[in-house]
Figure (cartoon, rainbow, N blue to C red):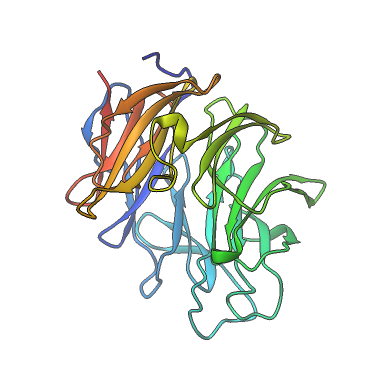
Length: 314
């Protein structure tokens, strides 16, 4: 399995109340130790998190603000979400750093938070917390998932609206405003970007198929249904999990039940360019979502203490 020439980016996890960042060295496998463990401000409930490439600052969202801290928990800045939401309404703000680390992209599920306004997508200066640009979205989302494009500096956003489906957006920051595009779907969930940024992966909201799309336009390169994996589409479904193991290989996740009504899941390798299914793949994952492909031939699962375990197929 060929390795990717693209470097593995930092990955973060919340472990024992600390925002931990991991920078796997080439060839490192097994349980990873954090390169830095940043302490949130006391009392902050961390929802989403990111860490700068130089490991000097961590960023996170709470239900009420976006926050930047140093490793010891010293607050650098705090940008409140206004007006304040008094109660939790099932809304989860998200944050993600741009590839150059200069912009913190924040998804605000304001409608579900009871702020009497549409959801917002906000570009924040990572150094100061100042709002650089913002855009209203046509969504009432519970939460969002953002993926930073490795080459363009732009961002993809998936907004989950529960039973109402999903919305997928693309944005870039230009001239002090967000150049925003919504893809023409309300039934596809964004899963992953290819390491080179040329393609992205979605799974049908109803879990009937997966599709690979060209970036930036979103044109469908190929689609695979449950049938293509040799399973009955009436009883087996594609999970909203997986991604690029390498630039040329995807991992897809299927779930179902045994005759004894016990849940099962399986991962499959797929040619990312042609859609050919290569067969089952043992990821050593604890559940369908315990899988984070890194794009270089390795992937992460979770160890007993919450720290990631890096694995390779060799």
